[in-house]
Image (tube, rainbow, N blue to C red; front, top):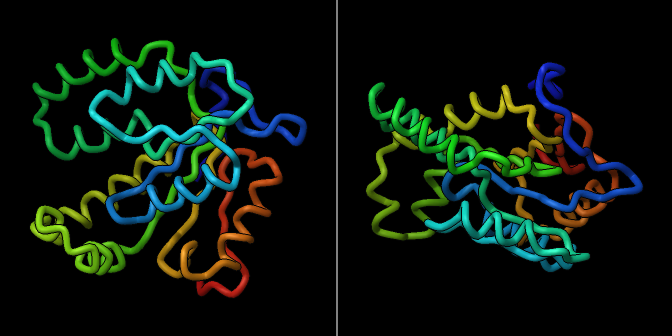
Length: 203
């Protein structure tokens, strides 16, 4: 992964004196986005913004509020592009790109993105454990495609500071020490792309 692209527009960055005000948690299905977003929103006393059909409008409204509390979302606007590239043909993609650019123009990038990743077999096991019928119908090949697409996207991502967490061996709910180590890590600024692996977790 790479750090901030020098050719990209300058943006405000979190620092030790200015903790991130807009945090996004992203990753594929069943990687733990909503769970971690709920926990961090409680611990950081953050306003939480849920993924929804009206995400663009609600994001603008939330960012417009002058609040001392940080904003924490469990989606990145650019995630739509990941799935568009997986599911649309060339002509549909051209139309989508025009629509996307008009909707997201002037939306600020997050101060910090927390990218959760996991091995496809771990995601499949979590989907099976959840037991949701619509998720159990997702083909194994599609889960692998989505995982690769997320990896490809975040390998080149430079719009925000990025903390990458492989959750295959981490459990922020059942292992409190994993959570405590992440909370301690978030007290320090993330610069460029950095990785988090709790002590005691397997490589």
